Length: 170
Image (tube, rainbow, N blue to C red; front, side):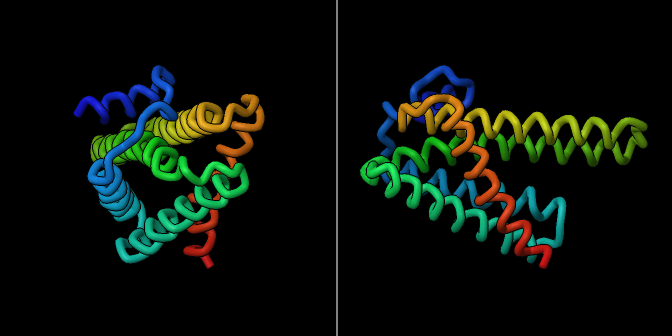
């Protein structure tokens, strides 16, 4: 449990994720949570079958993007550490997204007038926080300037979310 808290502290920019070495069981639990929470979120906002395909697409793109980046940077030995760091924080953001979906459901049932504005604000906040977290993780692992880490993080976001979403819309 302390390992999880140390990883979660990197979501708040408090801990260097490159210092953490996860055991295999932690990594697989993390992947399992990633898939299940992704299925839940996508199932709430789209057709469940499409949601499953999109989450699997994101999963494949996430692993592929991390692998290509590490090969490009010649730091393959960091694969388990990097993907675990990103996935723990992604799981944290996804958990918040589930909460945002529940808030949206409640606001819909209560006919809250500003529901759409609140949802757009929450989604924007979560996406920006996600990009900031991933950029922080990349900066810690690769020691690049912040601007390069932000570009990597935005690229990672587009690859892992944009491409699967685009393919599902075709």
